[in-house]
Length: 248
Image (cartoon, rainbow, N blue to C red; front, side, top):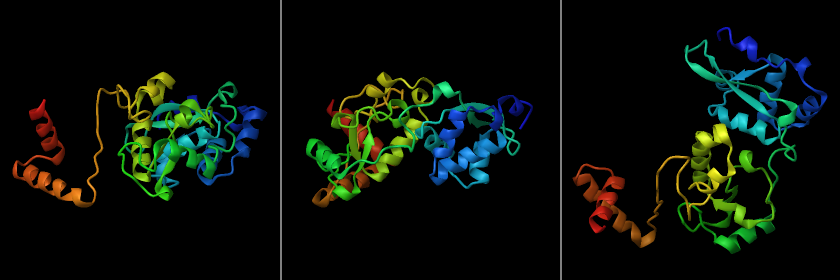
């Protein structure tokens, strides 16, 4: 691990009573696992999350802890397995405890979901694809770790998306410079993942995207485009871009 790991440890006996009470209030398995490891060893690394506990997406486990209001600091240390720099996490200061988050995200009521469907329709916010209500999930437009649960009754602060879109959004947000460093709400407000109907960037990068779904009789149009793209030996995305460019 190198010589730096001893400098970042947060021993259990250095934690305040308030922090210990908050740690002990968490019952869900994944964040509980992370918390117990840090309490015992003073830190946890992405290698340990992956190899010891089998979490193939360590940032998700760390996010679970933070969503319970517990501050974690991120450090860069050397992996004894690969020799590369990896992330290590320790508890942050008591002053950074995020109030109102004990127990993680609040569950949304069926009534609130109905209000969202009345506002946006039963469709995925990113693809526009109509879906059965049971496939739609309520998601914060601005990531929960950034904005918290501050607008529970405001439908404008939430969106309806399916599981695939939710995974794509989570991955992009968790790798975004704003999410990792600044946590600026205004940056999120102008991002595709928060407001796909009006945005200036995607995860702080100058990108634009459109998700299109062909359904029913429309699928024959997709098949024609795919066949033509294959003949030109390009991806269907590149072929569609070429069609658009010819029209501009």
